[in-house]
Image (cartoon, rainbow, N blue to C red; front, top):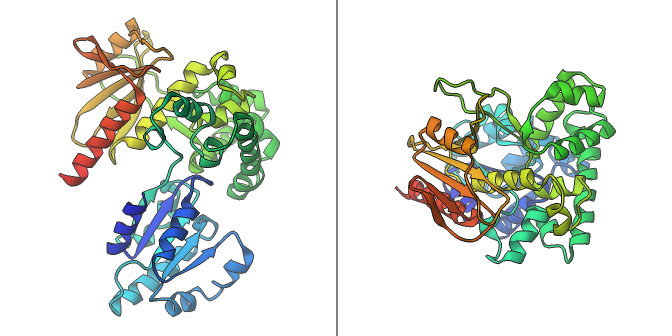
Length: 391
């Protein structure tokens, strides 16, 4: 990622590095800042924001330096000022490497507020650790599944410390970040929603049932989920939209994006506790989906497939070149396809079909289906991405 950001700064005036809190955005940005003449401002700090009271003057004064603005979603009004600074700099010959801005909201949120920077900014996402970024051994893979990909939790000296770190992190989000995004969301209600989502990991969204359990309106539940999606904590995976003559499910499936959060919210501090809990299959499903989407090429469309007749596929990947892959997950070292899987495979007419289990082996299940490890399939996706970027 550091290489990608440096390269983008060579040809764009501004680069946005986005991702959840505590995934290492600030550490990466400061490392890049130390390589050049730069100035760093944390927009969560009132004293730092005060320096930008006269933002135009500040940016013009530092025109020859890389200005790093951390937590830009705290002051989105600055984006308009950035546009003016960039255009003035261009008129004086400074065309690239002006601003590195960091934010904890999703790409869509920043793009909505940053349309004024069209043609002047490049976006990059820094996500939690994935299976390709850790040692290729069973202990590391188990730790990533149990603790999730947030570096502090994954690198904690013990499962218990990692568990406490995740519980503290969830509390911080409830009390600070979510409250800032929408102060009308009561932290206790949101905490109950998180726990309910953990219990129903990977289930079809039933906003009415959630609203009834929480004692709020359906509109409020959808607003809560929107905030959590914007903060990159929840994924709403849409169903396949296709005219294939089947009665398709129309509701999205909802996942907490980090399995460490799922397990912490369900009070599962150890790998053995997770394996013995009914959520293990759904948690593995979400884990596989997040790791594969982290490796997938840009503009890959992800969805799931389910019909009223029982045909089901956990993940459908439609690539920009028109190719389609279908992926089913199984909490098993030797996954076996079900009747529903074969029905979905036939309906989807996918170019390639995979069963992702927990084992390390790769082998044909049928002429059209391969069993494959998560790491190996993620590596294939990453290679596909690299091939497109260099093709």
